[in-house]
Image (cartoon, rainbow over all chains, first blue to last red; front, side):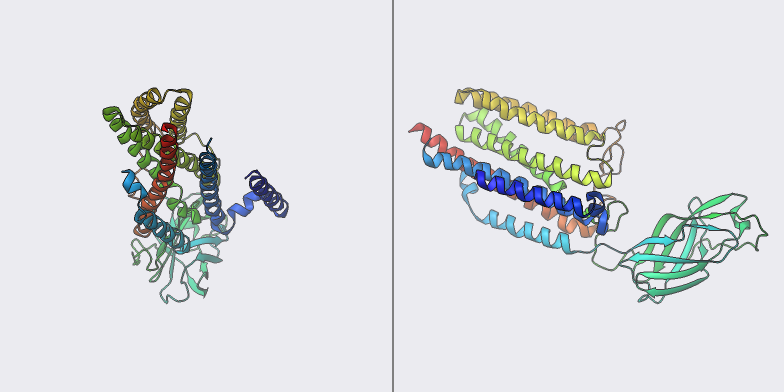
Length: 67
Length: 355
């Protein structure tokens, strides 16, 4: 679980820094008639729901282990 | 209700609806629009070559392309002298404006009006400016008052092309339904809080509390996606908008509900106090989300608020609605799905604690 979270954070950091060095973020977001804003919104929703599910998963695990 | 929450059919329905919304909402193109005009500033009494760039337009395919310039403050239309479509998205025109038509002004702003039988009428406001030259004026041009234009909007199956919004109009299917899902879950939670207060059944308390927890997820997602959208359309992530501040307060009110439950250790006391709190919370939440932003004295950027035209009248068109209403149902069902899993975990926990 913790390993997975670390992995996600590392991946995001790498993506973020590489996107920054390629070209400034605003121009990417404004390009192609702002379609990347929609991509960003969908990413936020997806990751939000995944984080919520992971927290539920942890709770269920505790219950299964009988604490 | 617990029995219904365990059933599968509505979960499959949610998946199918959300797939429809995701695929359709992302694949339907934007409608045609005149994107840009070059040059944007010309002197009077000179024949100027203009290039008009369109988006998803059919300048070449439609054999009847017409181009006009209309003073932004006036009602007359001036026809372009020669119209040569290069490709479907590019047209070259020649246009000149005599100084005598400027009515002694130093300069005048013009809207661009493009019309053809496939794309309908496309208007770009403040497209260009004519500056009055110092030389001799050519004879005045008689403007047409009411040119024969096709009033049809566009034949293609497409979402409306709106300046500033552009492709982000698709966020209507992702940002807005977050708030609808939150609202449905909160109403559900209110019903079960009241039922708990009437019957004292602990299952009702579990349903109410887990609905609030799931509603908070959608509230936070609504705020986050809204900030993302606002950054690139309103210019900043948190403009001073009453609906934004109201939504943030609403989320905090329900965070307080979770904190309140966490601070009480006695199960019955926890259930009773939080149920009463929930009934008051929905009243305050409704005031902040639906009443205050709609007051005439408050200015809001959100459609349908602060004297803005009502939501649905100008901001939605029939193609958007085909995906927006399913999106609301789909995301709400997904919310109830997540809630049902939480409820079942809690029920197990409760059963175990009784043993």
